[in-house]
Image (tube, rainbow, N blue to C red; front, top):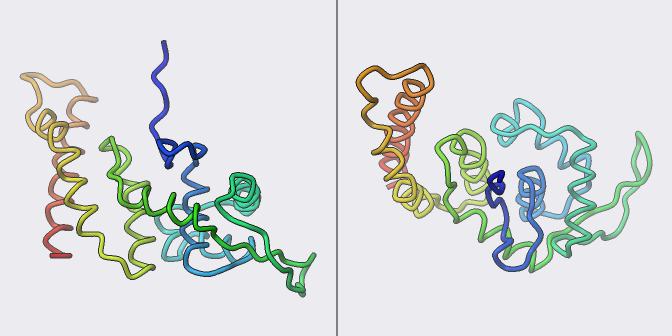
Length: 183
């Protein structure tokens, strides 16, 4: 039996399971109403969020459609565009805001998720002017057992075990330094 995928949304509250792309789009909508192309520009490589998580334009529009369908965002008025069709302005709903807040404050479950999902949360919190200290502390606690288990490799570790050991050590040091930075 295959393991179930990790939760990436507030599906505990009967909300649909959201992808990281949908959560990133929702996080940007929480800042201000926007059209799809403006959101896409915020998720391009080299931008504040895009250096952590980049998204292609068609996926932004697909995410917006799914968020609207789930009641987490709504379509509003349109604006003219110089380069194409009119642009539909989207806003986050109160339900979307609650879903986003729950996700932003929930630590990731795996060390591998630090690189993208955790850093995405930090980037969105930074942009919103929210202190990530509580998330960082809860993240350290959530991964403590895993990081301790990977702290010392077995007598003759294979390549994968050695990678996991070094990755765990780097993650533990990173979270410790990050907490000190925001304290």
